[in-house]
Each structure stands twice: as C-alpha cells, then as structure tokens.
Length: 241
Length: 241
DNA sequence: TCATTTCTGATTATATATGATTACTTTGCA
DNA sequence: TGCAAAGTAATCATATATAATCAGAAATGA
Image 1 (cartoon, rainbow over the protein chains, first blue to last red):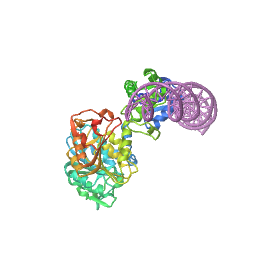
Image 2 (cartoon, protein in one colour):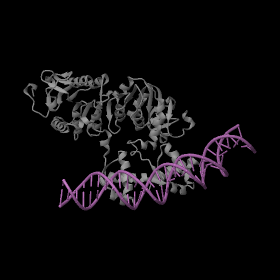
Image 3 (cartoon, chains in turn red, purple, cyan, orange):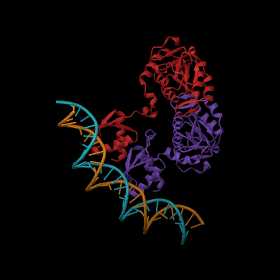
Image 4 (tube, rainbow over the protein chains, first blue to last red):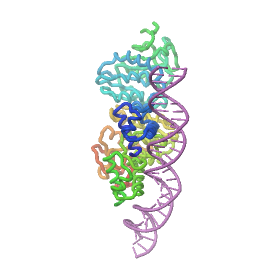
C-alpha cells in the first residue's frame, strides 16, 4: 500500500472513532508497528492528529481553526461563571452589542437555543463563533483590524455600530472604580464601547474581581450608566448594585 | 496515446479510487514507469494530484485545507499553485481587495515579507490570517455575516468597500466563460465583487481549471474587465490572455 | 523535404520506505 | 517508590522507487 494512501486511511478511521491504537492500525493496514508509528508521526507533524502513548486521537477541526489565545485560557473558570450569570438576561428576538473581549466571547459560546437573536460585534472571534450558531444573526462592524486583539476598530467600526439600536450592550473593561467609572487601556476599544453604551437600552458590564477598584487611562462611562455589573465577587455598596 | 490524454485518464482513475500505483498505471495505460512518473509530476505541479512514493493519491478538497509544514510544501495543490503565481504581482505599499473565497484565502497566507500592504476583505478567515502578518494592515468590510460562507455581505459591506480604491482586486468565481463572462452562484457575493472590480485599477481572477467554461446565475463582469486570469490549465484563446 | 522540438523507454546512481533488532522511555500496578 | 510490561525511537539491511541522463522515435513546422 502506498504511504499516503495508508495515512489517509488512518485519518478516515480516526474520523469515525475518537482514538485508535498502533496495534489495531497495524492489523487493519497490514503494516508493521514501526511503519504505523512513522505514519502517525508524519500526521502529527502536519497537525492532523494527536499522538498518544500506544496510538493516536482525533483532533476536531474547529478547535484548530482559531487556536485559543493564552488570554482566553487563563481565568477560564471565572469567565465561564460570568457567562452563566449573564445568560438568563437574554430573550428570543433581542438585539445585542457584544465587545471583542475574551470575557464576552465566552458568553457568545453559550448563545445557543435562542431564536432571532441579532448580535453586533467588533470581535473577530466572537463573530466566527456566533456564525455557527443557529438562531443568531451576526453583524460585524468591520473597520481596521487591530493586530493583536483580533478586533475591529476605528471610524468605520463606530459608524457601523451607530446604525443599530440594541436591547443590551454586553461589555467588559480593564478597570471599574466608583469615582472614575469604567476604564479601558486602549482608546480605539474605548471609543467603540462608548458607542455601544449610547445605543443600547441597557448596559451589562461583565468583569472578574481583579478589575474592581482599578483605574486605567481611557474613561468609557460613569458607573451610573451601567445597568448591571456581573462579576464573581461581592461588590462594595458604592457601585450602586 | 497523447500525453494529455493519458494524464486525463490518470485523473479519471484517481476520481474513482483514492490511490493508484505507478505499476498499475503503467499496465493500464501501456506506458513505461518513467512516462507515468513524468505524467504524475506534471499533474502534481498543476496541483491536480498528490504524489506519494510508488504512486499517487487523489486530492480531496477538505483535507487540503491547510496545515502545511515546510516539508509538505513540496506537494502543491491547485490553490497553492495559483497563490504562487499571483504572488509576484504584489509590491510593497499596494492596496488590495481580496474576496472571501478559499482560493484567495490561500493567497493571503503568503502575504509575508511585504511592507505597508493594505488589504480590504470581506472574508472572516482571510482577515484573521492577515491579522497575524506583519506589514499588512487589514480592513474588514463588516456587515451581515453569511452563515455558511464565513464572509460578510450586504449593503454595509458594499458601502464600506466603496470607501477604498485599490491597486489590485483579487477575486475568484464559480464560472468563467468567454460569452457570459465571470459568474457566481450567490448574489450577495456577486454584488460585492462588482464593487471590488469597479474600485480597483487591475482585476486578477484566480480560479482552477474546473471553473473554465462554466456559467452560473449571477453575472459579475465581462471577461474584458479582467486584467489577468491566473489558473492551473492552458486557457483557450477566446479568453484574451 | 529536413531541421527542430517533444516525447519516450532503457539505464544507472541515488533516494526512500519498510520491518527487524535493540536500547531506551513511558505507563501502570504493587 | 520501584518494578514489570508495553510502547517507542534509533539504527540497519534490504527492497523498492525515483530522478537524471541519454539515444532513438514521433510529432511539428518551415
């Protein structure tokens, strides 16, 4: 059997079964263990499978499409908790602004089972996740793509967002403080969040405890303009929640 | 037997079977191993098949998506071949329109090593790939995200594109025919491509041989408005190339 | 017609793939 | 923790496939 033909067969087998052992492949494909191992190594180098001791496992194709950034992996639990708290607010037929942060992106993953939800976002990853969810109509702001943040910004993005009015704006921030209000470290991101806030009926701020009491350079809005703060810690009284 | 006739037979055989060996082809087509090997090499250079030691395997369109290590780059597929042909056209400092097709997306992956390239695209994946490349400034059209195509479309996307003027428009299509011109099966995608064509100095059409002579519902542009057609087969004279 | 180019198959030196062997690593269990 | 079993990577000899070269055959074009 030809080398690539054999490797293709291995891939086929791994699409039907989650995992397979070297011995099984060896028997199925009439090749020695050494040959199978070399095939598996080649496939792994190409990113097609993942090796395990004694065999290989399937890599599912969407997980490799957009490799998770480090930022999303850290504090995963906290973000998941915030998403679960936010979810009950949402109803069928609503229109939502969602910023490009990884916290809000986490919420996007859970937007399943709704009908006629409309989302306007400047987050590339959020948009691509929502694209796969039935019942969600996605609008992306477009504009200049900010390299490291995977988010759109700039005049065009703001103009785009201004065309809509939403039931909720789901936003995150770098810091929130009773005196200074909600702050962000990047002006491009901040100005777009201001647009979201202006054009939404209710503003939901989602941030973990580490942001509380922090102050950053760009002011987004005073605490009073936030309808609800969703966080994983007890909030002091000054936040008016 | 003529060389091209023999190569077509090889392709036919490989459409029915996953893989075939040089010896088998040699027997089936009454030619020496050397001749078969030369045919296979030609087909591989055109991106039509993938060579393996002892024979060749069929290229199936999903498996070729992308994980390509350096060593695997020697095995080119059709989209890769087109990308390599298009690359020399591009110069530092230029502005490019790129559509959302997978063919153009492949070109995007190679846009490395340039300076001050500006790209306007409606392709979600193209945008996210370019975001990671230094020297490329990415603008995404935004607009309604078309679920299955991972691309933006609609009025907003068109309005956005109209704000720019580009040196090149790199577009793909479903069909091209000397009489009907360039066609597409989806109107949303087609109307955006028309905007790209109108606002670009030169239009480069990239498509593999299977599109030649095909006609689809939505007309994009006549053949004359295409500055250069990049394909992996010999073009008949009527295409004016 | 002849000259030129392209194509072909034989030859050979080189490169690749394979399975056996062996020494080493990981795993799981006591 | 340490030991046995299972799995692996490295090496090697062998078989097979390949690219490179060449000379003759077939097509091409003046």
